[in-house]
Length: 441
Image 1 (tube, rainbow, N blue to C red):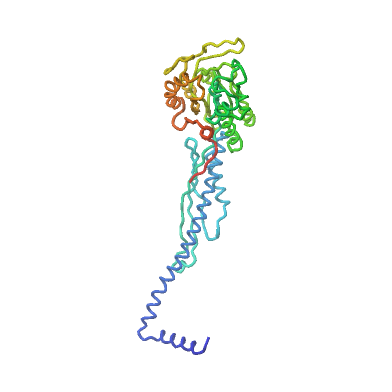
Image 2: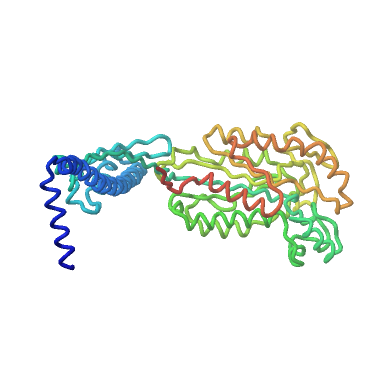
């Protein structure tokens, strides 16, 4: 630095010190302390904010540990689940890493764990003192921080899923207009209803329809069930779910016994096909038979007390025809219970009766129902009179009856296209299992 600049700075400094009024020095001295205090406060406040963010994250982790461990102990039937959860949370908090931990003094947090329904809640409250740096000139050695963090975990419940699939003749309808066209073009037939039982002559069977590339409604249903079971098997709920599978036409047929073997359930669902006997649909009688087989459900909190859910997949139209292969005789279904509205056109037709669902719900099961909408086709000319009666008299009552059959809002679905059916079945399984733990703050 040039000598003349240094000399000029020295002269300015002497002038400031020896100023006769002293005003400049006094004002500077007065202003200096609050300026330093403000600057120091900003620095220390920023450090405190960082400490609080780190402690919040630590409290979050502790809350999650507390809620999950308490839920785990509760499912095991351990009556000390509450204190076990608190202890797990305390350990997680103590083991946590906080940047600049030497500058933070924090006591053991207060942890509260509670269960309401299926939701386990853990609240972690902490108080800490963060050591200051620049604020010490004002004798402020620490700054206090505190907060409460709440974590909720949906407790995974043990669940028995009873899957009931309508495999009567109406489920052999072509899945879409495109599939109808494939059948008509390739096989020269327009029979889509009642063509797949052993009483029907010729080659117009489900196998021949599929052989030319057509998809049937039963294929869409079972493929959606298989996809949902496959997803379930790879989820965290797999260890807490058992599955049973049934089909029905005039009566109920057990297909797969209640088991935690989801791979076996998938294989059984894949093998489901149309009934080639009977020909009719008796939903009421089939549900009564199912109810007789269902054990009493439990709370779902341990393997010995699973909750229960029935997933019913049907087009919700009943008819009282019955063909017996052994005798070759068509007759009225002896287990038929008339219900209104109904219409007679060769056979009696009526919508699903919610009364068949009531005993299952009364027993304590959740009832989830898919209305795979009955397909009315204009292509099958021989059946137009019957289709017209079903469309005008039976179908208008189906939606409300499906809703009444189910456990309520969110438990009944209506779908037509393959994509809609897949989406509905996926939602039904998610609602019924309701097993995957979820975290919220």
